[in-house]
Length: 253
Image (cartoon, rainbow, N blue to C red):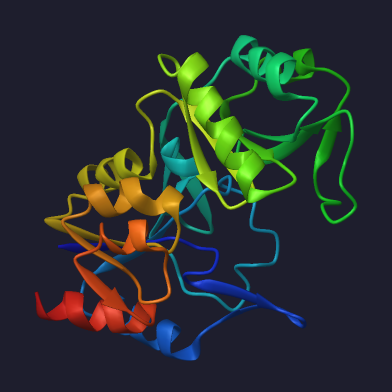
């Protein structure tokens, strides 16, 4: 059985002035891939239930690897149920907040949703604001998405997180954001968990950004875009312009 794992933002789903959209050619190719017995899903930095309306008019998904590999979920009737989780502790969140809280804003993935500490940015009305880290007690914390003012700041903070806490946490930069998960967790490990849990024979992965490199390295067949950064393109077996083009190549392998 063939399994295909796609990054979501700027790979499968795009934003313009009117909102989010999917390419019609990608949707048709995904449906054809599934009709021929393949399984298609996401491998994303977003939390499991952090899509809002962005999945409307999108493909039917067979699985989701969420929170940069910390969650793997299968489709069960009309919802997705986690079958694998790697969690962080409130102590680890407190360490990050004490060290980097003044330079950034934290968005905490817990129980598949997003929580923020102390304040909410206006463009994210769906987030729950917590008065303290202790309010997370008892929840399954899978990732912290750290927003910074610039790509350079994100790069510097990611390097500091990995240098200071690398034995217990891993930080992956994505433009102005950093996704922090438990050490040893990545989009790559999440994709491999999905392959095993779904009894896949071969898994392909596609992504556009630096945080997708673990996915590209772990996948049996990897794809990125001609427009991706050089360090991402170097990790891909094939360069394409669309997910549909990648699926066409994968079908012939």
